[in-house]
Image (cartoon, rainbow, N blue to C red; front, side, top):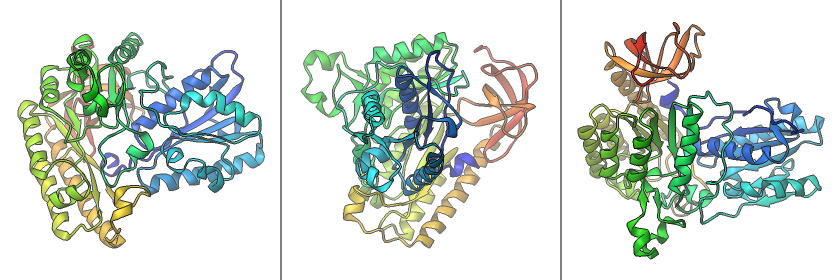
Length: 481
């Protein structure tokens, strides 16, 4: 049930091959969204040029960095618990320096140095290029802070280090920031306004991944559908662009089409989409190209029009249904997943029932579901009382999770007896004798290893399933190899 109840909070100590001549050791952990994991690869690349090789052994580290998430209170509490662990190690190794990166750093800024006495370094998500200078400050015995947000895509010229990569799948960041001021969300304040990356640099990074034999690439952004390149700058300033810039601008549908056309053997995914920004041309491009995965993560947050308005989600329940209908019409076997927040301020039982009925209409493949937690600085925190009792939030969340469990099983049951293409990613967690991979719909499948290897596209006959996993037998290679 991992996908069904995943809270998007996970940590990973990352490592890479040692760069000859580097003598200092970096330990880096990432929590939260996929963008944070992608940013950690950029940080490792920057610091590799400054004499750091990464280590998986915390006790050996000269520099410990934690890339943080502020989207929910639990994410921040997880990070603070990790800092307690770092503090215990620092008492043994007083020369070790500790830094906080990412959204928590941006939200709390220099306050972090006061709250967490062991922190030496606080760096926001747009300031990683300044790490060499900041580390010089720390080495000289001074605390260092840089949390300035940028108006440009910040890291398009940096080739990320693929940390602990399986050599099969990789993330490529295409946008940063978000202009959709949802009242519950801190992202616009911690990641800044929307700006997009030069499509040429995106294609060059993908070309490099293809040359290194990667098989699947996910285009990544807080809101990928808002991708718009017109020569640089914030998306909100596009109306001020010249006629030539507007005529030659590249939107997300065009970018997706360009990449799929150039690399027809590479599986393409993208995340995350916002319903109000997903256009028909994106769906049409997906339908056009076989190598664009038939899967869309499409957060709804609530099924109630009243709550959607309170959240400043700029679409209605019916508009969401229309979008789902258009996706299913053009891509009948497309899988849809969701984000849902229950217990938002003023949510009634009728609002909750609206969410359950919306889920019944869509029958999502899986989802990420949470009880509302107030985030300081957001409009909801400033204007709305967190008035839903915790026991009510927990009960409603349990009902949503249980319904999603049933829908996931329903969707997976539909695969039984079918033969599907799987890209092998790794050994199964439960059995070394089985491979694990995903369908184009992003559904996990496991099957006996046979003579296949990681990175192979394999046709698998599905014989049974759980609510989270397909189980089957390989029947041969896919023609995509």
